Length: 435
Image (cartoon, rainbow, N blue to C red; front, side, top):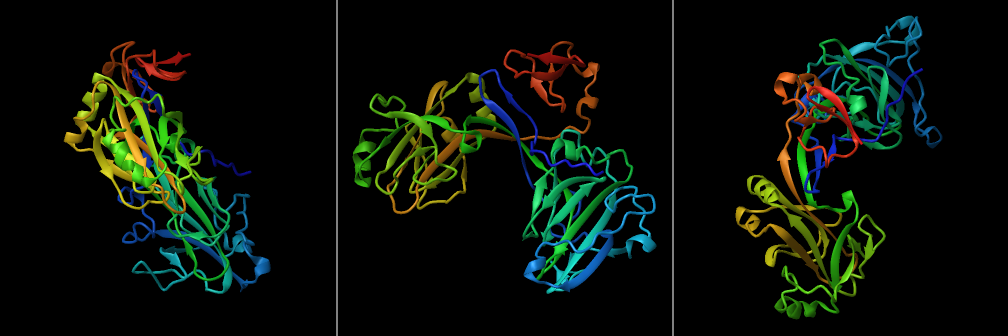
């Protein structure tokens, strides 16, 4: 019986520093980090796969998403996605090797296709793609994306016989998913052969089947002011009556650090006038402008980190936002950016506005027609380079006994145990449990 690994996606770890600031490794897809090329993102590197195709009848609505055929098990009972499967023409039909891209178009992204489907004829394609990798290709603490382009569905992707991803409906030639650590660890990095097996169903119209592996770009993010992705956030806020009231509010320097907040409402953001991802506190944006103030505390260590790294202000807004850092205008924008976020990297001069102790990042938004929302945050982002050896690369010669602490992925966490969350760690080359 096949196993199924479709767990929640976790890029890496979250820890709490000694000064109470969240640190998190975040992943992003980068098509330049090729482990195994795909037709969609690395078309200049066409790959070969063992392919089994079934072409059925003309499409009808009654047969929508109905799988028409599956390769038979081999003579010893192995299924088509098993690494031990041995294709046998007598029991499983015709398997043959073909070169990507696997599309209904004559050419896909400039390369001649293996045309496995016809536009109005339902069909199935089953692919077996073997490959070898080393720890240099997939570092122990690295993260991996699976490209899973498909047209149509149902579709499935297996790594070494284990189902890691499914698409149940529709099509998306550009789809990719971040593998969980458990899914990534299915890939053998000792030089032995791996199998990536794929099935894609064709309903009607265009057809496309694809797969590939890419090493994630990883960034260590230290969050000082979180956005809604990490939950609600505390603030002080004030709703003006009209946009014309901004003139008096700015004369009174509502955004200054020493503003008297006794008349301000205390609550949580983000704010929105609609039941959407930002709807934590209601803001009738079509009627009234809003002023928002968020405090954050910095230590000398924080200031030193910020001086040497990239400090980023992120903001999703609707509409006409103006941001102030410690009483100085930091940034503004016209209109709105829907559910997207602008990223503003602070200059050296802007970072000099920060002080030890209390700081204020304030944002105003105007009254406008239609929707309205505000969500913003502040974080330090530094590139994270995965370690090729993970825990296995940490030896007692490299550690000060009972001093340096690592998580189970081999990431150095400092020497202070008092502020680490409960869990299992490595210190002095030995496992320790923190309660």
